[in-house]
Length: 429
Ligand SMILES: [Mn+2]
Image (cartoon, rainbow, N blue to C red; front, side):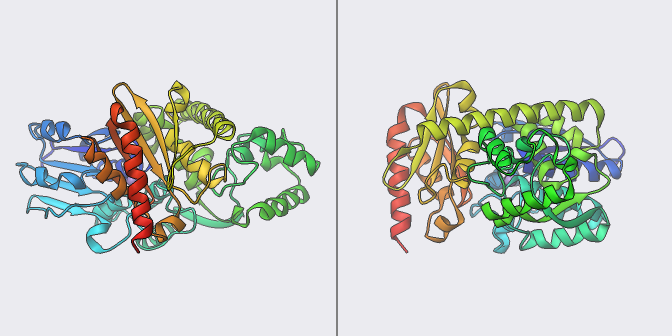
C-alpha cells in the first residue's frame, strides 16, 4: 500500500465493537498504516451512503455492517465487513470481504463475536498477540462467561500461544485490588450472586454475617478469610470460582479480560468510546483515571437501576415482560438492567424482558432472554425485527439479545405484537 493510505474504520461503540476496532487499529498501527476510526451506536443507511463519497482505498466495518452488503457491493472501494449479527441473503461482490460466523454455520451469539471476526481478518498478518482483544469483545457480548466455545476457543488458544494470556483458577469477583470488598461483591454481576449483586446493603450484610470487615480490599484479606469467603460464595453460586483470564503485561485495572470489557462498556455507555479505544491502543495515566471514574459512575447507575427494578418490578404481558421509565438516569441503562435483572433473579427468567427507553419521538428497545428460553424456541432477534418493521421501525440482533427502534406512538401495539410473536415461537416447535 502507498504511504499516504488512510484506512477507514467504522465500528460499534459497545465493548465488543471497541475491542474489534482495537484489534484492527493495533494491527494497522503495527504495520505503519494510518487509519481513521469512528465508533457509532448504530450503522444507519444514511452513513453508509455518506461514506461512499469519502476517499479511502479500504473501508473496514467491524461488529456491524452485515445488513448492508448490498450497498457495499456498489462501493467503488474495497470493503471488509467483520460482523457477527444476523445476515441476509445478499452475497458479497468481489470488492467486499464478508466475515460473519452465520455464513459458516457458526453461532454468532455464542461462538464468535465482532472482535473475534475482526481478529480473523488480521490473524494471518502474524497477530496472535492481539487475540486477547477478541476475547475482551467476547466477554463484552456475554460469550466467555461460561467458558469459551467454538471459534472463541480457537482464539483463546492463539492468545495462550502468544504468551500474553494466562489462565488461573480464582474467585471471579471484580475490582479485587481497587475497591472495598463489599463493592467488589455488589459490582459482580457475572456470574450473578443473587441477594448480593447490585445490592450494596446485601453485600455488606453478607460479609458482616461472616465477621469479615467489608471495608477492606479483597487482596488485603488474610488467606483464611479468603477461603471462608470463597466457600460462602460458592454456596450461593458455584460458578463464582473458576477460570480467570489475565494479561499480565496490562495495567492492573485492565489485567482481567472480563473487567477490561466492563471498562470499555462503561466508556461506550457514557459516549466516551474514543477514550475506550485509546486505552486499548495503549494510553495510560489520565486516560485510565478517566475510565475508572466512568466505571464508578456507571456501576452506581446500575445499582440504582436494580433498586428500581426491585421496587417496581416489570410490566407483565402473557409471554414477555418489559421495563419502562422516562427517568433520565434509568433510560440510559434499561438494556443493562434488563439483562442483569434476569441473571440476578430480580426478574422472572421464564419470560424474555424488553427494556424500553424513550428518545424524543422514538423508543429504543433492548431485549434479553436466557439460553433456556432460546432452547424452547425464542428468537428475540427475529421477533424484534419483524414486529418493529410492522410499525415502520428497525430491529434485529441475536436470538438471546436483540434491539429495536420504533416510533413512540406504536409502543403498546408493538409490545403486544412482540408478545404474540414470542408466544408463537414458543408454541411452534
Ligand atoms: Mn458484538
